[in-house]
Amino acid sequence: MPRRKKTNFDSHLEDQLRNPSFAARFKEAGDAWDAALQIAALREQSGLSQGQLARKLKTSQQQISRLESPAYEGHSLSTLRRVASVLHSRVRVVFEPLAETPGSVVREEAGAYKPTPRKKRT
Image (cartoon, rainbow, N blue to C red; front, side, top):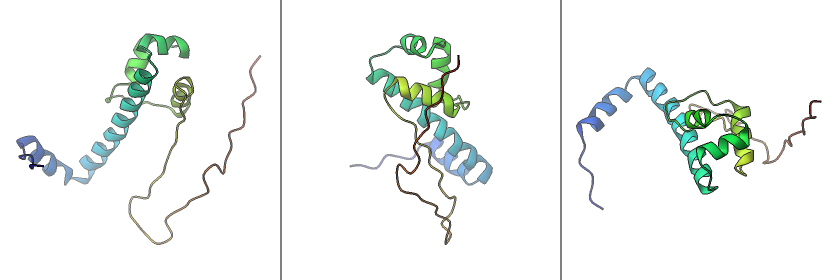
């Protein structure tokens, strides 16, 4: 496969990524982008419009649009779980060490914790 020619933007981004502060913000934006794209893809695979998903979640279409926006960084774990449940999925959070250091990895067997069902409010 032929290599793509480096654009001015590619060069500018490389320069910017040398700044640790910019690189950290860029990485965080990438995480929000991933969440947004996954929500939109799951919704579309389920054959739902934003409005239909909103009705199932008892929220507004604008809120679904916000969740699917790569610029939005206010995804709460409880909201993501509600969306995942309606879309027959689950949320998985992974903490990764910033650098490999001896003894820095903490792991448990998959499924070590089982969620406790919440009591319904009356």
